[in-house]
Length: 156
Ligand SMILES: NC(=O)c1ccc[n+]([C@@H]2O[C@H](COP(=O)([O-])OP(=O)(O)OC[C@H]3O[C@@H](n4cnc5c(N)ncnc54)[C@H](OP(=O)(O)O)[C@@H]3O)[C@@H](O)[C@H]2O)c1
Image (cartoon, rainbow, N blue to C red; front, side, top):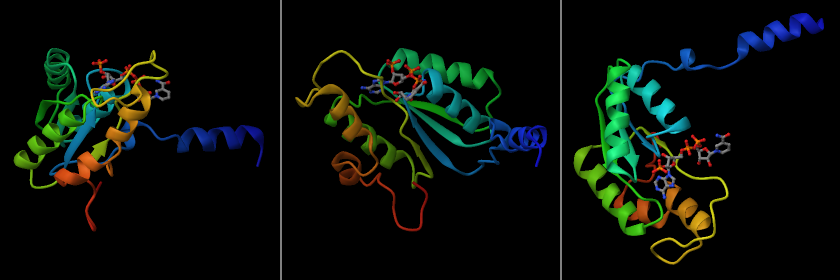
């Protein structure tokens, strides 16, 4: 295969948002969805018809993000819940709210985070980046305790 042919083949195989299939009937939760990668992921899922929950620590930024996604032509329902991954109590409260609102979750996009934040501690006393990462994993005690972890035979 010539170099030119290989380049064309790779370009054709590049995965883009256009490759995201229809998401009708699915429920997706995206953490840190008020900006950056999380916002774009939430917007595309909503455009494809998913019910999308923006799990964000700042309610004002979350509301503004919901409005921006709706303005982009979301076909699915978009809503926000409050979630601060630097607090296990907040993770539990968010998981409880999800459980009471939905019978199931199909997608959990654990996007929220900051690269190398200044030294700090979570509300529970853990080093900030480590504590937030542990809170974010779908198998963390907080998510499992409330039943939002993946279940056999279902999406995660
Ligand atoms: N962009 C890159 O090149 C890159 C490379 C490697 C990894 N990543 C990772 O990819 C993810 C998204 O990156 P991005 O560039 O899109 O970042 P971003 O625009 O800064 O977005 C980060 C999001 O995470 C949220 N967040 C931070 N701490 C949180 C907490 N304690 N609880 C809940 N939400 C919290 C932020 O909320 P606020 O708006 O309230 O701050 C924001 O919505 C991050 O985890 C980042 O570390 C990014």
